[in-house]
Image (cartoon, rainbow over all chains, first blue to last red; front, side, top):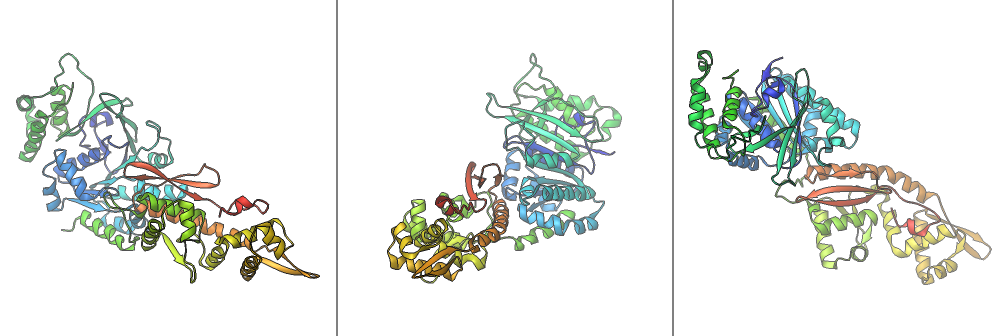
Length: 299
Length: 241
């Protein structure tokens, strides 16, 4: 099965190389966990390699999301919007449900085989737009089955109940139907606040079953931590550019051929942003390694 | 070359025309984001076809405040009003149109007291009924006449006395309305969802359906009676529709 890169640094290796193409990934988390950031950087990654991106928003207005995306460091998002490579679809839960019931199959028939990256953020209003459980299952099952045919989908789900309890009715159905389920656990009450990620399900792939701490970093999105290196940890990466240069020099000739000017620019931009950010105890060499792995430049 | 994103946007966003006109988003206002309106709407779910004076009594709001917010609720389609002599209000879709006037008649305090009294004491005459509930006889007679016009009670002549008995009409209407209420609750949840109040239904709390809403980041509740809690022998429960 073909893998695509997730856009989340450190996640691909936890999912045996990335997200399986034409699958549905459910990202579950409470408010502030980073679901929309996860989804946004998933789209960004696809755009950088020429894929089309569709952000279906059922809650926030597109202009609000764009504003937050820019604030989070993706400053050229509007270029993709202007070119039409990325599109926001603004829909309420009822409206989108009507589309799913009446228009989706026709739409998919027309665009079958297209490989877009699609985000539905959040999926929860679709569930709420129908009252009965069996209807919820029907509509979600149909939606996920059809959208697979036109691309790879990330849908976010809101965790409303007690943290860690994924047995709520709004979660059980999509979790069962999705190919991949990722839980973002956000302990905002702790000091310092803490975020952990766990891959609950990943069909047809090996995956990590551990909790992995992660941070949300401006310009980079989510960065998953493998291990905290206490002794050498630094809180600011002043010389990330030189570390990047060294890493690029150490690449094999074969890998260096994969470098395109656009890729270099994107990586450099990410690293420049990282240089200004505080990412706690994370190892800078590990971060650079993850970034280059994301672009397929390292083993 | 056509792009999938543009095509999807056109198809989905065209559906906006089919959706209810009041559509809340972050930063915009659903009519039920306002506490007083929620209070009024909830009151009407418990006391449909109430007049303004009754609503003021039930909610504790001033006449002007209640009147203003009822107007807002009516304009947004949450509430309907009717009545030639006395205007009364009810949640839109809560009662079948053919039964609205019957409920309006029963909502008049004197009428519902008379009806409840006859349910409790079938075969009473007008004088006994009036005396029992401390109502002037002419008022009691007027109420009896109105209830009879909806076939809620029937008169039989026993010698010199006219005695009044309840019919099965009330139970039949309540049974019909149970289905209407179920549909009403479904529609309300859909509309609240559309208005992004993130409704969550708690079905575990007895005779009422408690709907939790997310209003400006905090959780609020809307309580809608699930069904008519009808007990012929219990005057208190009569009031809950």
